[in-house]
Length: 169
Ligand SMILES: [Fe+2]
Image (cartoon, rainbow, N blue to C red):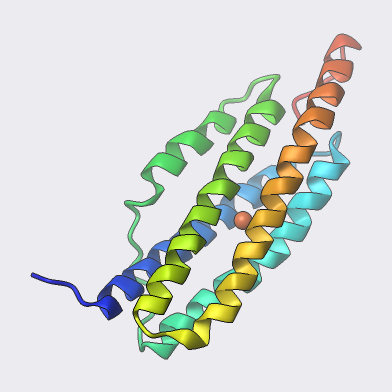
């Protein structure tokens, strides 16, 4: 059965919505465990706020095509889910694994929005483009921030560990 541009658009909206819900879960779990890494904590808190806005944009776009986000496709999360599971195992270097995984996750989201924007144009849904461009810029800024924090986070991790301190959060 052939799918039309609108079907593809709706699927993309639902997948991206599922991705943002996953993002919120991951970040909310991490943010409570970053007492020794205040810069990372701040970046995550700010991005949690932005992500609520991104989720709202996707929900509005779904409403505009009379769809609800309820029927979520989990398939897209397979790869990301495995990657994020890296940080779940309690380990001294959990903070480092989370930093790598967050970097990967934000870049995954960048690709997802790039793709959604293209699908959006193809489906003639110009009304949602500005909002999704905003979401894309937010993901790009967060990806840069996470990248910038990899070095300082690692340095702090090494200092704490060498000092015999708990460095995992
Ligand atoms: Fe994000």
